[in-house]
Every structure is written in C-alpha cells, then in structure tokens.
Image (cartoon, rainbow, N blue to C red; front, top):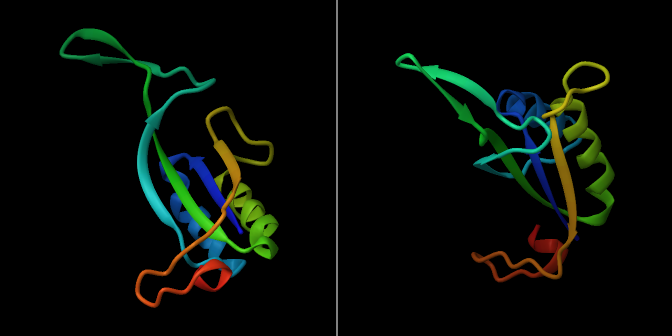
Length: 115
C-alpha cells in the first residue's frame, strides 16, 4: 500500500479528477494549501501599494492505493496536472510514501481491503 500526495495547480483539479476516474481511482482527499518553490511567488498591487506574495495557492491530493494502482495513479496525475506537452514550473510534485496500515472506521477492516 502507498500514500500518494500530489501538490497541483488549483485550476488543474478537475482535469486530474477526470484522469483519475479514467484509471478507476475514485477515492481521494483534497486539501487547499499554500507554498512556494521555483515559482517564488509574484508581486501584486493593492490600493496603490506594491507587495510581494510569496505563498501561492495550491491543492494537495491525498490518495491511498494498493501497490498495483501506484503507476496508473501517478500517470493520471501527470496527465491531468501538466501544463501543455512539456509542463511548466509550478505544475507541482508527486510524493509516494509507504503506508503501513489502513483501517476502515465503519467496519474495522484493515490493510488493502480497507482502501
């Protein structure tokens, strides 16, 4: 079992959800987050004053999958989240973490059956 954490552009969320549905990944958690990397933020003008915004709005997806779904999940996120053919700085990152256990609260099922 793996926990896939993806940080993507907010406007790419629907495209990523569609791509995940195509590969039969239907369960995910979406969290609004802020951060910066190579984009380094941008400058905005507010009431005549210029100020720097260095935390940019992103969306974090948390997806628990069985091992056989890892590659198709990652490929779907890349397909839906990438800008254009080659992508752009700020398209995001995908982290794949080992997951020791999972428990379904309602039934008490554990492990891969609980996912």
